[in-house]
Image (cartoon, rainbow, N blue to C red; front, side):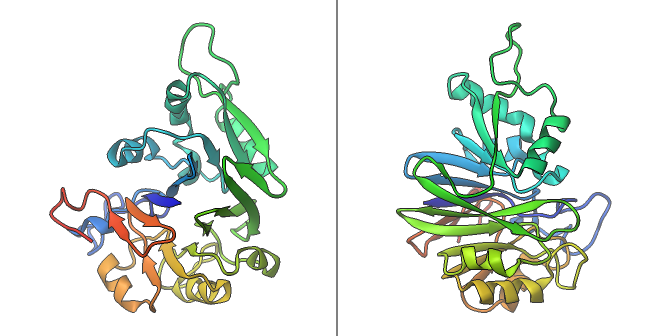
Length: 275
């Protein structure tokens, strides 16, 4: 199973509009953070978790040409604004509806945001996303993967994380949360890879700060962990030095191969860097 980070930034993205701080003006490409999303390839299935505003740009830059399903964590715009671009994958897949999984509240919000979504080709031949909205209350399957939703606390909006299990490994993804309830932690403990919210170094009302992120990782006991949904508090290089073994900050384009310790940053060779 392969994970690729479409984006790793907070709702404003990094660099932020009108900011001249050290991170926003950094020449390190790892400090340029699109809004957060993830692409997963496993056992012949390709799906994404969330469709952030730069979804199309990320897919083009990273060479993603196949998506079979969408998992939605919640309805905040920084995780859903690129949803319309799913229509291109409808075309690639042969004009068939694509399943979009999420909590009932999340799907109701998506339908309101994108009222023109359909399940059939448009009679005028115009592009419209063809989506089969699937409410989730328990485990479900996407291709060869078993997906377990788990609730996290993220302000007042209903938010899910997801655990994904396949024959090649397991991971849990919780990009937006202030805390993970004990019953949810029980569902993800011991995964191969845990990707978790880490907005900034200091506390925040609806997101984890660094200490909270590390506490959640310690409780989850994964083999490896990655921090995502990062703001402009600290450079990638400096944050990396602050973390314990087995924990790294994610960055846009990072590829994580489960069952391997190999990490590859896409486009770094083009920019004169490698990892």
